Structures are given as C-alpha cells and as structure tokens.
Image 1 (cartoon, rainbow, N blue to C red):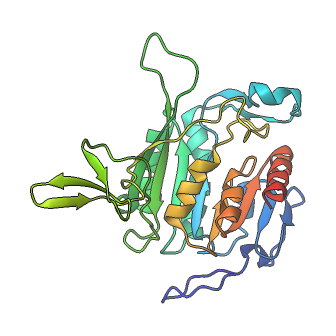
Image 2 (spheres, helix red, strand yellow):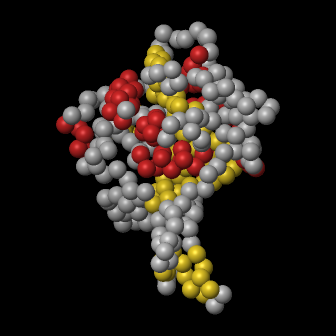
Image 3 (cartoon, rainbow, N blue to C red):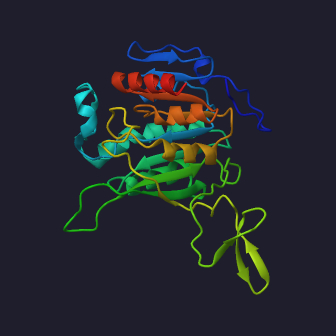
Length: 303
C-alpha cells in the first residue's frame, strides 16, 4: 500500500489491499493489480484506505442544486432511467455541509505531503465549502480558485449568464506539493513572428528578439474548456459528465506517472479514464451502480 515515508519514498501498491471488514452495501472491483472501482458509500470506503495513499484527489460532489439531475437529451433514448440522481437537501446548506465535512476530512488524511485536492463546485456552495476547506486544510494550503468557463445554451434576462464552475485547490503541505506548470493557447500580443530555423515565436524589441515558449503561454486559473454539448461524441449518458480535457489538465499538473489518482464521486469515470491515459493508477467510487457500470465500460473501451 502506498504510504509516505519521511523522505518521500513510497511503495506503489494499491490502497485496496488493506484488510478490513467491508459492508455488504459496498462492492469493490479490482480492474487490475493497481486500479480499483467501488460502488457504495464513499465515506465508508475512504475510511478503509490507509493514510497518505492517494497522490491526487479530485471530487465532483453534488452541487447543492436541490434538483434531480438527469442525462443529457441525446442520451435519454439509450440511457436507463437510473441515469439520474437526486441533489436534494432537506435541512438546507447545513445538511449539505454536514455531508461533505467528514469526506473532506478523509481526503486530507488520504493525501501525503506531496498531494493535492481539487473540489469541483459551482456558485451555489463554493463559498461555504471554501471556508470548510480552510478549516480542514489550513488557509496557507489554499492554492487556487480555478474558474472553468464554458459557453452553453440559455441566457438570463435578470442577471449575467452563469457560465462557469469553481474548482477549489488545496495542498496537503503548500510548497511540498506536486505541481507541473501547464502551457497552452496563443500569446495575446501583436507583431508576433516565427524563427526561420526553429519556428519558435518571437517579438522584435529594441534589445533584439524576445522569444516565447513554443508550447504557448502559462495557463492561469481561468480555464476556457468547452462544455460537453448534448450531441458530443464523448457523452456516455451520465448527468453532470465532465469533459476529458478538464481532467487531463488537472492530472498532468498535479501528479506524476505511477501516482494514485482518486475520485470518490467518480460518476461515469472521466477522472479514471484520464488517469489511465496518463499512466496513473486510479481509485474510483460512486454510490450509483449505473455510474460504476458506465465507468467500467469507458475504461474497457479506452483500453
């Protein structure tokens, strides 16, 4: 099992090898020697995993929308009626935060000093959860409030259209955490030229050529990544499915090959597919049997 040592030498084995009593309501499947998908209460499952086992955790919990989330329109013809989940909270925000708090505490326990947590939310609860995370992780371990901006249909007439999600990022130990700066997009500057031999972009200044990185500018905390439309080929029939490009970026930035990436609200398995593609190990969990079925199917197809 992957446990941090004082000098950061950690064995790369599966956290699910810990021998504990498992509830009859929890079903765990090993997809291979290093990877696991479980169906059941994520809190119970997290409590069975040894401390400091997960190098990166991304979670996409319910958004406190007080609605029933269902599959996108294109998917309803082939999707089962179980491709829905209720995001209702009797008792309001206090009930919602009481649900999240012990799970966030477990996330903190499961991360080593090099680990990071990404919590995906929207305008309804992000401000409440940030205060909760400051309490659990400590204010100094806050790294980013990422704004995922996208364009979808619909426009508000009484306020600006709400077209972004918020992803809160915390380190277990700020300064010791894994982070690889990411580049992409185009440079926003006039007069950009390209080197005749290397093709590297540059701008002519009074002091000569000012060269730019060929991979593009450093990515900031505002991400323009397209939302999955109702007709996107990537759609698999699960509500709130996130684009693979979003998780690709998170995993590339905050983990290394061979690391264990965990998602305890994994839905249809986008995090797991991205981890597999980037040669990371994964641990996924969801309370929905249909979500877990879709995740396994996508992992098989991604091969």
